Length: 274
Length: 249
Image (cartoon, rainbow over all chains, first blue to last red; front, side, top):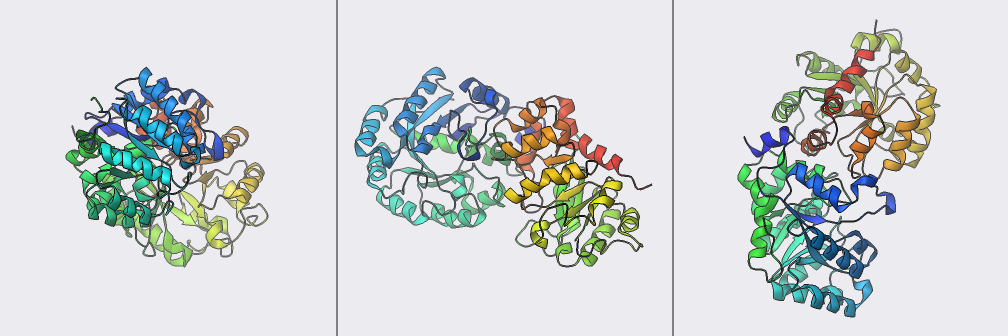
């Protein structure tokens, strides 16, 4: 059976899957909604079991409101409850100030539950702000992944390019396939092809006309990282965009987990155990 | 599992999409294991004569896999359908699976007043009416009135889901004839929430081809935490019930 056959049977994936973009905890602001019994960690794990997702990396929802300190506490709590299933990003927001960012870096970069950083620019400033620059310096030293939000052209792709030049050891992952629409994906793909350390992450694809097969054609399967945005989004849609895609099983395995695991091989932060 | 797609499009006016012609749509349907598709021609927006005319022929040649969806423009109702004295006669002659309207492209409000020459006929024929996009606040305000004024007219809304639970759930609870394509129902657990409400009979599978592709929608269906019977209802049973409810004779 191919991975696609498993999907058409509604079975868990027969290969490792890492969800590299998640926001544990509820969020009912701005029209978001979750079925009330779907907001617990137990429920997320149960849903992951049905899909065959082995592990995830999370930056809980308070990061949206600029509450990175609280997001990091929630992330650690979740990871300690579900070690080997839930891993953490160090959430960074400029609004909490430089001292908070330094404290988070000091607290979490050597904690094995934390595997990288999460920036939510656009919601929280732009990526050339000094707090992000400090965190990027730490990430560069740790050679770890940094998942960066981008929706449309916010934050601007030019800021990504500046940071890619200045922090060449950061594994920079651009969320939402470069910004959630085809035009942004095409622009981001050029940058992905120009920088070895720049990747596209898959979630939030419901409005884009670009399918995974085309993204593979643009940047190659090894530059694509799987993510779902749960609990903002139900994870099934973006999961299905890979699982039901007509691309090869080898490419699916790279996207679902292989690429992310490779990013962590040279990282000095936490590792994901599969 | 048999799958009927209620949102597929063909047409030479489609730009930057996966295909234009019906044979390519059929190839995509084969690849994604979709048995049948409610299909309209986007060429109708410029010329209902060309679009409806060609779509009827291509549907007839598809051995039942492409089900003709008639595009209706309120300013020229029935254009492109077989000859007849009234819209009702023309629709009976055409026997579409559904009709499709596009208030946004046509620049008219979705309101009983502006649709009063179409809706009585469509309700009499129990013809599912697909409303194509443009679901803004005014649309959501007007929809309950339209649904209640024509309670036997199925109204199908496409690609509604994320961040819409605060309108979809009341519409499911308090109207009887509003249906949703579930392709981008991405509020977390939305399909399960609707099923628990007892309204799974109002969800329909759709791909959005060729602008979009079916893979995400397929996962919403195949990985839904609902019974197999409910999955069958979404995949094809609800669409078949709407088709069986049409009253052409």
